[in-house]
Image (cartoon, rainbow, N blue to C red; front, top):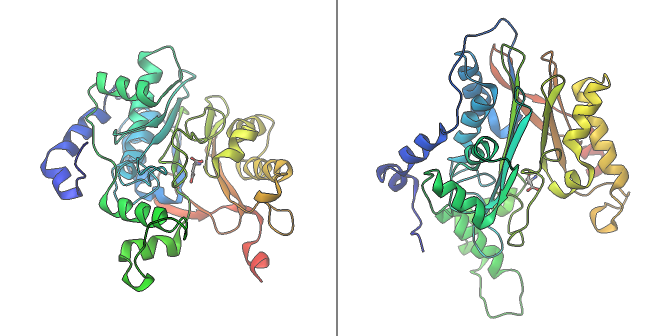
Length: 354
Ligand code: ASP
């Protein structure tokens, strides 16, 4: 088994350099910069992502390549426990990553799911798109494909994520033979995680100066998921979708709701029908609420007891986001600056809480 590594040893071992080198595999040559206004949007954990992607777009990078480089910052960040290195593991303590990409100019896409040991699954997804005539590789096959193309293997489980997972496992039952430490002796990383536990993932959609689109969604998926569980992120049409003539959309949050509703495809089709990005995203939220019939997934008023957030950019540069519950934000760079903006919401969390 591979030894866990911390960020310092990762860097000194040169693995980070190797990972960075493989990030460029499949990237297109730079081209001239056009006259259109570029826009990059991402989930709220993507402020650095939109800044990086915009920098690249402004020197002629392909919009998908720019988005992949942007999310790679988060994939390599051990402190984002919802994506890539440091992501939360499955119930067996193994990190399994899902990612997908779509490329507007070639109307193509690729994805990997349940991929272990590879820090940059989005870059592998781009190679699936380019070097096979398939759209999705999973598990062992996806790993072998990544190895074949020279992606280095890394133990993605950081010490912090391992401690959090162990605490989850030790506290699952008070009738087995495991003894978790008393609360006041808990490691601070464990205390903090269970205090603010939420969902993560990163989506990024980019519109370049030629009006071309690219998008990516990359995640470690639901925390402590059943091994082999695949969410919406690597499923084209669910966790992301684009049409180069219309716009691009993607999502974070409870993936099953997007799988059941093909939400990202719906948003792009709503744009095609003339809706504004925020309205199209709100429409996808309404669809989820309408079809969420399982009482276990409802609050006492029949509303979804989970959250999903959508991020959308239209071909003309208009952008917007929406979530089921208020409070979500999205990262945006419109060529001027990177900032967080509020998403619209179907339900007001404060009214629910009062
Ligand atoms: N959508 C991701 C999944 O279901 C999780 C998330 O965004 O938090 O795998």
